[in-house]
Image (tube, rainbow, N blue to C red; front, side, top):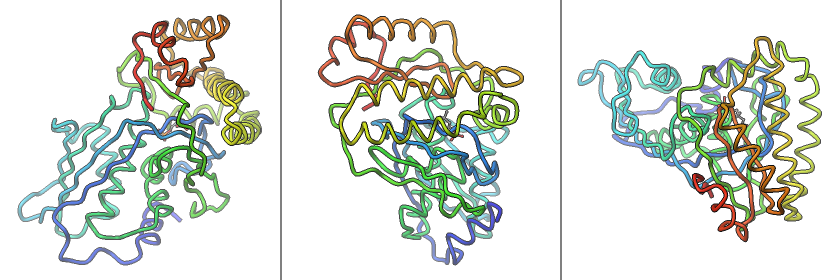
Length: 329
Ligand code: PMV
């Protein structure tokens, strides 16, 4: 099954006129505690392993408008009120995705507002595709179950399937070739005193997309062979730690998992390193802070920025050591 067949299978009947004029959707950004790194099917964004994330308090809000082709001859896209050029990778990616659902003789106008910088390792493609799918569900009155919306969001960007839900979310890797069993499931546990903050390092465009970096890691890194088993163990420990509110275990597993992901890409051919000198300075500051008795852990995605994990009781003390940090939860 390819992407087109997947859309056809999930949406069943093509949308019928009259369409609503507007649809809107809002989705949270999510940060993986146990990372998704490596695809078993790059077209359908099917992962090699399951993953586990926490949805945070930053959102993408998307409004989508359907306009008859007689009034508009191509799609248009605005990001944070600025027109996105047709030649940009972001425009191409979104418009390609929308082609699977575009009714004949109509064009889309999309306006999307991001609370966070785009393509800076702050996983905005995740909330972006999740918000887009929710906006389409509203526009076409599909009323699809969350599980189906999660699969559709995954077809846009893998980690987007987790942004359909708040709180702790597990993305089941699934085993089927068509990916119909690869979607996100929210965990029932909540943990209000668990905090996540963001240490900005750089908002420059990534040197290599996460998709390409994953493919290269899977194909060439000798360390990647160990990754699937490492993730299975980490998932089990992290979920138990969440159930037991065991912060020491959750923090150390999340940190180790992120470092293992970066180690696997660093040992790929040619090496991939998203970190900047400032990233390493922050890492050392975290480890010193922990040694001094304040429990804080890090996680990092495909970018130079750092996210801190800590408990609410340590928030004031932590912001004295990391004054440049911003709360995410
Ligand atoms: O969904 P993508 O293709 O942007 O990949 C996301 C990969 C990481 O952010 C590094 C890890 C994750 O699980 O979110």
